[in-house]
Structure formats: structure tokens, C-alpha cells
Image 1 (cartoon, rainbow, N blue to C red):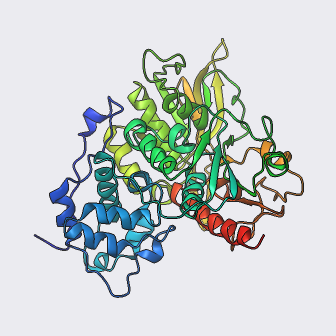
Image 2: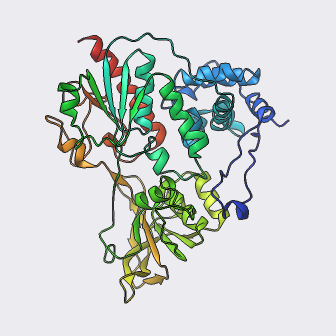
Image 3: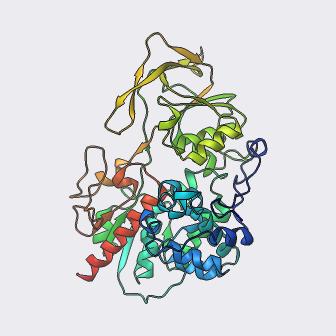
Length: 461
């Protein structure tokens, strides 16, 4: 065995998976997981842990996998993470824990994410639940939203003995895990729903169809409903647009709406009551993971699909794995291309998108080279649907109905970075509602930090 090379992971062939919504990656089996774990050097000063936003004791869980002690490995992971099967699939490990791996200096980094996924999937298969140790302390915490930040916060608080209730606006818990990430990357029934059940097993209650700001306000949760503290983890669900001509045409979607219809309402199913317009040619504007998810969904629904991105491949913010999968499946990448106008047919439907070619100049405030339009380079891509995947901002509903809550100019909630405390006493926040759209694992890290802050706050009351 070449210890410099990671054990490869089996996947559906590109031509097959491009026609279905089954999970692309099969993950490790037991023998493969043990072999990959044996590559770990078990460093005395492991750098990988510092690269994990939720501080999983990575060497300790991998050591358990080496010895075939998969349940003990699960116990180690769940000391820090409430959603290991999710994180093992969607975290950008290559930029986090794996980027710090010493083994990666002379070969491939340990496949930490795939090992985490294996351990979590094995536990789900064997119906192993996270350990509950704390007795109830009689204090109540309300958590707004049921996405990754909220689930992480709720799970940690429940382990500390708090009575936690999650309030979710939609009919289904999970937030972006349920409505934003496609089935072929993150199965709902066998992964997301079961991980949520594990959080519930810690004693967390989830109430769906409750819109905080309408059904109840944050102030009412504190004054009328008997909660001692509130965590706002409502995410960033307000889509952004370019502001170009034609964005109001029939056939223009935000990626949020498009993916929600597909993932949460299963609109890809012919029996769904929420069908998606079946386009023949689709342009997805953007270059992040959401853009890849939307493009790969459109492809599976039968469309010739383009990614339109104004910078080069080097600047694509999406995970390299997702970009490679999209290419393998046949997505067309129109790079250094900027949309100028969405064109209409005589009935008000999309018939094309007029674009201009770009070149890269000096770096901008983001550190990426600024795209500059090449004069007289306009051309038209013939499409009948355009999906805007340009990021999202926090929904202003909750913030606008909370007294004394400080909001920044982006509409994000302002917090104390040390503990997640907002300007309102007893109210904490974290995740995309604070940072704007970010990754699942960063949201979880924020939820964990807020749980610690809430615990310290309530112990002083």
C-alpha cells in the first residue's frame, strides 16, 4: 500500500449519475475506512484540529477507526459535532482540516471528511445515538430556525441540560440542508432526517410552521413564553439579483426558489404537486457551490446547462470536487463571461441571455482579480431559463420585529464575536443571519460558540 496516496472513493459513473438524483459518492466501506485511517501519522501536535470550525478531535477518532472501533469513533466525533454525516459530505475539508494535514506535505492528505462520513453512516445504519449525560437544569432556550447553526446550538445546549425548542417557519426541519442542497449530494431521508432525529434524541423539541416575527416575536418568546434565552439562526434566505434588464421574465429563478422546489418539494418527481418548469437550455449565473447545485439539478432534469461566471476557473469559489463533478457530468462552463441582459420572446418568456467577455485586471477588495469588460465582445447564449445563484442576504423579518437589536448595513445581526451575544439582553445569534451566506460547517461553529455563550450567560442569571 502506497501510504502517500489516499484510498479512492467509489462514485456513480458521470453518464449514469447525470440522469438520476441518487447520491454521487458511495463513501468508504469498513475495509477501505480502516486502510485510509492507517495512513494517519497521529501527530503529537495535530494541525488538522485547528482547521476544523467545530474542533473535532480528529486524530482520536481516526485512531478508533484504525482499530475497527467505529462506535467509539462516533462518540469522539459527536462530542463536538451534531451533524457528522452531513459534514462528512458537504464540508470543504480541502480548505479546512485536510489543508492542515501533515501527511499532505508529501502526498495526499488524509481523507478526513470521508472517514467522518463513514463513521457517521455506520452509526446511522446501526441506529447508534449520541450520548446524553447532563440532567435537566430547568432553564429554557428558544432557537429560531432549524438549519445547521441552530441544530448545532440546540444539540450542545441539550447536552448541557437545557430544555430547547426549535421554531421552524417551514413544514420541514433542516433549513438549507433540506431545501438548499440537492439529493445527489445530501440525501434527505437517510441522512438529513436521521441526523435531525439524533438531535431530537438529545431532548430537543422542534415546532414547524411557526414564523418568528409573525406567529410569535422574539420579545414574546422572552416575556410571554417563558424562555430564558433565544438563539437566532434563521440563515440567509433572501436571494440577490444582478439588477439587469429582463430579470422579471418568466423563466428567471433565484437559485433559492429553484433548489427549494426541487429539494424540499421534490419537484423532480413527476407526481410532485410543485413542478419545476422543464427547460431545454439553462444558464446558471454564479460560480459558488449553490451555482453548481442548481446547474447539476437542471442537467438531471434534462437541460443543456451552462455556468456563466465573470472570472476564470481559478477564482471559482465552489469546491473543487463539485466543479470536477459538474464538468464530468457535461455542464458547460462559460468563464470570463458577464450577463448584460436577459432577452424575452413575444410572450414574455426567456429566449436568451446577452453576455460580454471579460478579462482580469488588478485584485479587488476580495483579493480576487477584478473582471473588466472587453469592448464589442457581446454575444448571446440561447436559453429558455436563467437561474441566478449570486448569494443571499438575511431575511429582514425577524430583525425588524425585535426591539433593541443592532443590524449592520448588510442587514446582518451584529454580535459579540466572543460569545454570539447580540445587543439585546438574552438574545444570541449565529450563522448566515450574522455573516451572510457561508458554509454549513462555519454556521455550525457559530452555533456552538453561541451555545457556550448562552450557557455562561444563564449561569450568571
